[in-house]
Image (cartoon, rainbow, N blue to C red; front, side, top):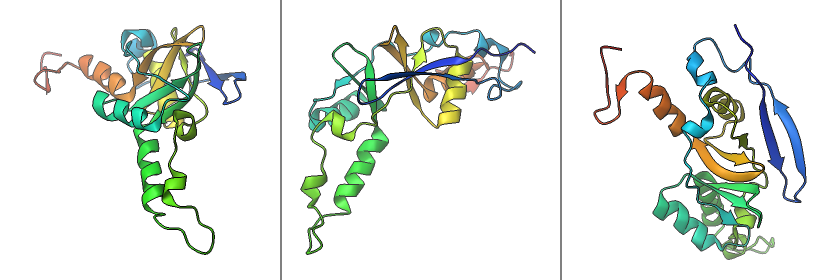
Amino acid sequence: MSQVPSVGCRIYHRGGQIEEILSTVAEAVSASVPAVAANVPVTAIMTREVICAHRNLEIEHVIDLVVRRYVGCVPVVDRANHPIGMITKRDLVVQLACVLGNKTSDADARPLATDLIPRTAEEIMLPLAITLDECSTVAQAAALMAHEGFHHLPVVTNGHVVGIVSSLDIVRWLSSHAGVDRRRGTADASV
């Protein structure tokens, strides 16, 4: 069995420092994963039109992007288009739950719900972005998502966001290679 190459990840911290890490996914990619997934570049399945936000974008606009554009996450980028954080639908729901769970202030100096509401993308984002290089494969993307528990990963070229791959992109790719007709949602018996 051939060894699966490592995935190069860049973690962008809020302060702008870049820490290179190598995450070995050989253990995560089992023999049951189609061998072709280790040879298909993630660029073949990623979404190329990525909706990103700058750190100072007002939270109302972030919510509007997620709701009106039906996106599961919004990468937050600096002026050079380098990812510095991520905002997911879950982040927005958790924030709403925090605000609704703390509606009033009392003598214990609990903040008012309105004090807890983030005002910008930077205030709600996860202040790091784990990314995939454009040379990564579908198998590497799947393994990294499974290992880290993510549903979306930005794809970068020279540190710039060029796409995003989601767990749904991977499932669609797998189903297309398993003989499933996307239009009908049925399996092709000839495969």
